[in-house]
Picture 1 (tube, each protein chain N blue to C red):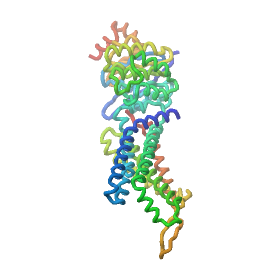
Picture 2 (cartoon, each protein chain N blue to C red):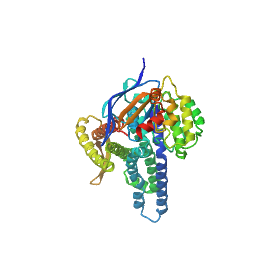
Picture 3 (tube, rainbow over the protein chains, first blue to last red):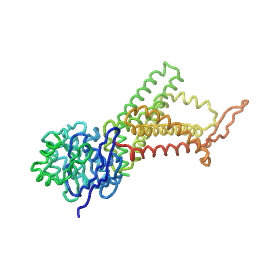
Picture 4 (cartoon, each protein chain N blue to C red):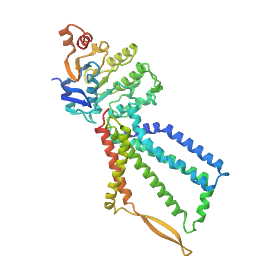
Length: 233
Length: 253
């Protein structure tokens, strides 16, 4: 029996004047990698923020590992937002120490190993890091935990190809394919599609497609990247 | 507890620069007064030496506003809201750090007042009758300082609360924050006035008062009611936790 990591029923989120998510119902299986795809404003970030507990549903329900989203569920979730949410005055080492103190599943040795793997230096201040380096540091914070659910919102946004490769390498090397559920929201489908188990296509806050990645490829006889281009362009 | 300590240390680190600038400016001011000692009236020097102490509550109120504002401005609020800790950890860590720095700076400013005007202060003390001992004067100073500290804390919490509530709205946050600040002031004193009667059982503080009648010196006992202070403390604690609850359960990014 497939275990459910995230279950949404009639989930809607309305901001003043904008319906960001419209009556979403789905069940995401545990231990899978899900690609959350769609054009700008389709509701990808809102969906991730709802799971992370940063925004609340206007209607409907959302469960993470069988529990409603609360402060408790934040312990199970590792969220990488698109924006830079790190404290600029901290060094990389201080940043890792800061985050590590909040999570019992934090692995400091792994974090340090990832810093080396990502070509970063622990004594560098966050404010001196380039956008690509900050993206790598954010990913280290996400992967240095043994969180049940990892949410990555545009991890490749504004990142040079070299950094993208590093991020993908780190993801495939450190992700636990059995116990962790990974949701990646990205525009860079080409870079990430080979690791997707499932794909959710969102448009105007509604689910356009939710299917296994292999089924989509065989059904349409094309890559997910090409399929996205056909659907949204 | 480890989580709270980490947040507290972060807040202290973030406040260090402004606190250091305030400290340096205060030292500069005291040095300036020391230089002017021989040109200006002693009473004027004494009065002017209180400026750093007088401005500290203003610094604290600004800190209450800026502290959360910078989390929104720098988008680190994403980090704050995604961490698995209660909202009051954030509010209290900011309050504790601000009050720690306030305490250190206020004590140093008090020391500055003494260093600049110690001769004048002792000459004033000498005018008091001998039976008014240092113990009585010391207790008075301590209570005045406690009141100064307490009022500053109350206004820090009100500023913090006003800012958090203003974030419920997408526009006019500054105006809303100001309005909430005024309204919460009114609410604080209305509620505290009502609670004071219930708190009458709290012990009064004995204060020695002195004076002269028909050439005779006297000391008599006065009592300072603590009920209003406990009432304000209860209401401000409620406002503090309401703001923290809003942060954790209502605010979104």
